[in-house]
Length: 295
Image (cartoon, rainbow, N blue to C red; front, side):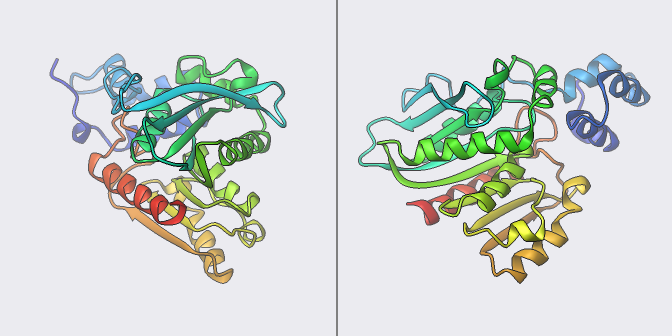
């Protein structure tokens, strides 16, 4: 059978995967609906394999990259009990303290993709911390399906407090200059927005396709924002007009980009929702923004 190409699939397949990835469908329902698109020589198995994350062949920065010091640390969870595990990454032989970035995962724990993003940030001259909000439940279980199930067991506001604690940990780290921003994806985008609400000393926030705070919460934001949205992400984008109105009404510093023709998750290079051009541009803008606000 010839390889599946992204452009050959019905766009509804990606909407279906998005619904599954965000717990709108259980696995049985997802497979059942996916089977409707198993036509023209396609099988459910081949479709499922194609749209599922590929963590083996997609690393941009090797785990043992010689340019980095990258290792796991732990810090106390203020709400979840026990300690939070996180991947701390920084460039080797850096001169002087570095600006910090908290990297926030999606709704499935600290998987390979988010760890890779943490290392990418470090290569750009930052000290990064990518926490695992599933730590109180044993940590990311090694696959996204079980990771999503575990994350549903935690209260999202308690997880928000854990990421705020990561900010405090990084801010006081001896290799950090005390200026710390946050970048997050999907669930992490909501966390990034809410850290801007809750942390008045946050240096900058960059939510990727993240759900938005309400007007009362938006009024509390002090940090400058860089917001990335995907044009085809109708679920998250439905909250953008009201958020933009609130940002303007409360004179919040923000820049927002809507990336045309791409899906929710376009930065995640482990699934076919990935769009290389949009992801590269968004990341370039993200790093430039952090360098302008944190250095």
